[in-house]
Each structure stands twice: as structure tokens, then as C-alpha cells.
Amino acid sequence: MVETRVGVVGIIIEELESAVMVNQILHESADKIVGRMGIPYREKGISVISVIVDGTVDELSAMTGRLGKIKGVTVKSALTKK
Image 1 (cartoon, rainbow, N blue to C red):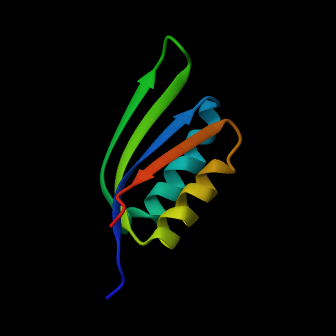
Image 2 (image 1 turned 90 degrees about the vertical axis):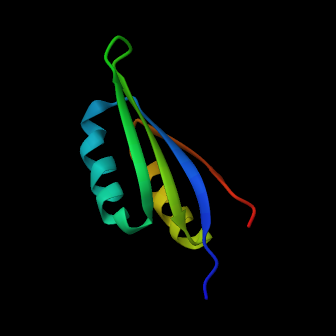
Image 3 (image 1 turned 45 degrees about the vertical axis):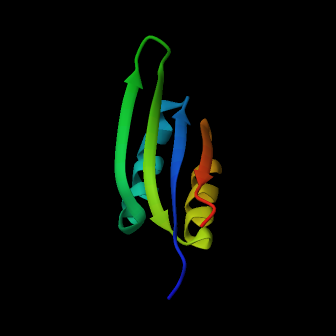
């Protein structure tokens, strides 16, 4: 059995037109997402998304790597050690 990790992925979207691409990647990764909360911070013109994930290190790294390549998007993640 392949070992999976639970973690949290924090996403900050500073260019709101990039939200479409972020949502597409999250949709494609739906089988690894346990829960998601998105907050539009209108006063600052940004959106903040926190995503709880459960997947292999390779799957989660691929997802966060794709997200991090999007213009105006910052991504940070933390995973369980086991």
C-alpha cells in the first residue's frame, strides 16, 4: 500500500484573474482534497484559500508545483511526517 500524508496547503492569489487556473488545478486534484476554505479579502484585493489534503508526497508536490507556477499565486504547504 502506498503511504499517504495529510497536510494543509495555503494559497494566496494576488492577481484575481489567476483564480480560474487555481480552481482548475484544485478540481483536477479533487480526489486528494479533504476540505477547502476560500476567503476573498476584498479590502486587500486578494483571495486566500486553505486546503486540507491527503495524498502521496509525489501527488501533493505535483499539485503545489503546478499552483506555484501560476502568475500572482503564492503556495505553501505542510505535511505530516508519517
